[in-house]
Length: 41
Length: 512
Image 1 (cartoon, rainbow over the protein chains, first blue to last red):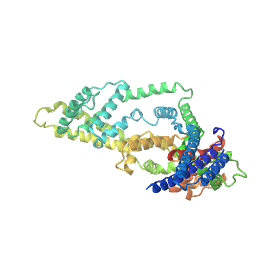
Image 2: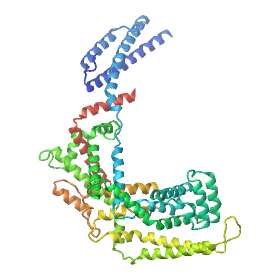
Image 3: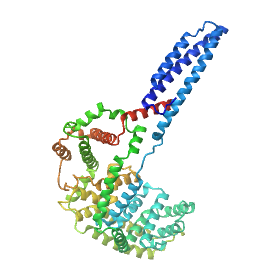
Image 4: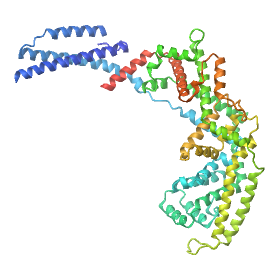
């Protein structure tokens, strides 16, 4: 990914978008892990 | 890039929505896939983050410029000006007055401080070419004894042995520090002509570098003060540094904030007045407000000088006291000669009460001199048409009077605080941008705020009486400083967007 040419303001927005999506993925992962653990029990 | 990331995420979301999690096997598969996706986006985040860190580095490595070279040069010029002016004597120029003042307030000092003051004075005599010895300290036998030990330990003033000597003698002679002070005053008077010669010689050397003598010194000082102000205003490093450290807030310089702020003072902006013109007028106005604020700060000093100037003073009062001191000292030397007292003997010297009385009388004479000294100097140097500038310049040369005025306002004031006030007063007096104090005479009773308002109204600048009162004045000056900063941002082509981005990255880094 060629980040060097991207404007700083856009890069900050990208950072926030990716960070939010990562949080979303982590939440989803936790939910499925929880379900899996409950199923095992 | 943003668009691509958004599309990728959208696609990724669709994929995960379609992945089944209805049984253990599918759930495990889902977790494997989501881990891969998390790793992928974490890597993307790290790449972006690294780039943001790289872009932030120049801001983070900024350090504040201190301008020490200018401060040092100004200090040297201030010192040279205090040497070359004819408003004070060698006693003030070499700061003997300050040291004597500090020693005379010995109750406020510990022994170490008193010894340091003493050492400074002895070093001053040495500098002038008068190497003092214990035999020069003859006010009392105790003084001679202490100074004998002092000279032995002068490079080890923290010595416990010296402390012990002091303690032993102090119980026998509780007025010993006062006697040392009077002895020092006596030694200065004895060697006064050598001190004056030293100053004359130093001044010749100082002024030999300048064709026009003292005038050049003043010109150099003014030039340097103006240059320092300009360098500070145009310093891009510090401008950015103050945004990084939140001394300046980016939001204050947004157009919807700064334009109304400029128009509050400059109603013709932007139609009939350019930003450059606003900048020049803002500087002038800020100088006037700083002068007004300083004038208000030292108003009690000015009023006291006005009062002293108007009050009558007995003719030749100092000469009369000096004559009396000479007579009393003659008497003291005679009594000391006759005295059989020895500190080692337990027998009380029968002449001791008389000796103590003479010393007390000498002390009273000096106290009276100190009380009328500044008034005498004021009357010698100031005329009805002399300006407030001249009176303040005179005051700045007399530490003792400044210190007394400070103590009148705050009896708990420390020497460090007095030094700071003295330094600030001198800096105010020598400010080349002063205009009002250079034109007001000592006898004039002018309402300075009216003067400021009227002057700037003529220039079309809106300043009201309310703006000059208390906290409002600070607020007004803070507004004007913002206008100066805004001008520099424009001039140096620093965009608010870049500053906003820098602050956002700063927040991101703080959260990490």
